[in-house]
Amino acid sequence: MKIRAALIGMMMTPLAWAAPIQDLQQVGSGEMRWWHFELYHAALYSESGTFEPSNWPQALQITYSRDIAAEDLIDATDEQWEHLDVSREQRQQWLQELQQLWPDVQEGDQLTLLVESDGSHQFFHNGQVLGTVNDQQFASAFLDIWLSERSSEPELRQQLIGLNK
Image 1 (cartoon, rainbow, N blue to C red):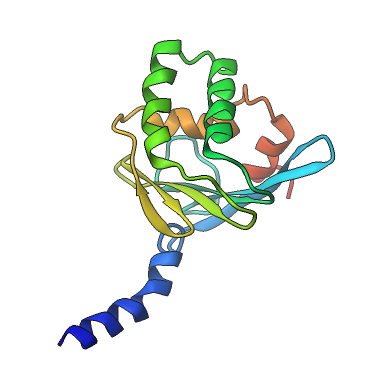
Image 2: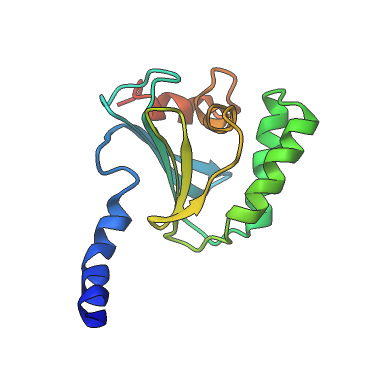
């Protein structure tokens, strides 16, 4: 019986990898570069394949092009939220939770934020659940880094929301 359960678990593993975006359609995608170095490739997904702010479900999937320490991901997220005028107190609360969730990433790794139709969310690392930040405002604020009209990367935003196909 234990062998059967193990085999079923092994057969289901590929499904877990596909789970974050399997029912969604790609809206758009683009690369984030720093100078001439590609840092990551990002793709936005929605149920309809079109971008409608706060119309869930949506997923943002980032595929890293280089190794990046979790601490550097946290620092970059903080800088982006500061750019978007998220209060220092709120940033610190969310960043503390992200420090518990996010791993160091290696070239080829994927981090995905999936926002469900009810607004709940989960982070995935290479298709495996990492967890969630315990705040209903978090998902919108996190996606705003890329999707807000005030994003620090307007060209990438245009690509993600499907305006530069």
